[in-house]
Length: 127
Image (cartoon, rainbow, N blue to C red; front, side, top):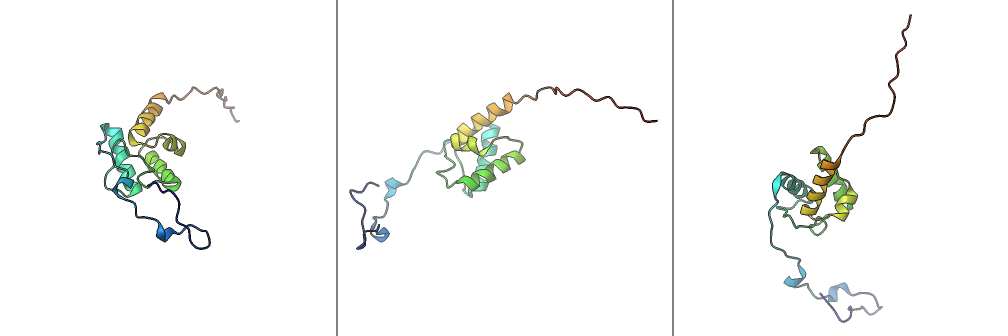
């Protein structure tokens, strides 16, 4: 909602009670797009649990649904319990379900465990 000027009280502070009520156009609305595939479905269920919302679509934004930094940490912990590895930074940079799923998928495919360079120790015989 756009205002020409903010309503002020007699002492020059913002008069919150004088602010107009937001209209229906102030609510962000987009068409629901169901999650695709197993990974997106799993993430959608986790988001719904953590955010306490009824359903989550592919283009929904974690933070627009009520998420914040503490819930982001909770989500990352729940993802790890499901075997999905991501961190809060990834969620902040990829806040939609589809983007997070695509990035999580690529991380899972790119993880390679390098061979160890530590030489094996020989056991000494004790007499």
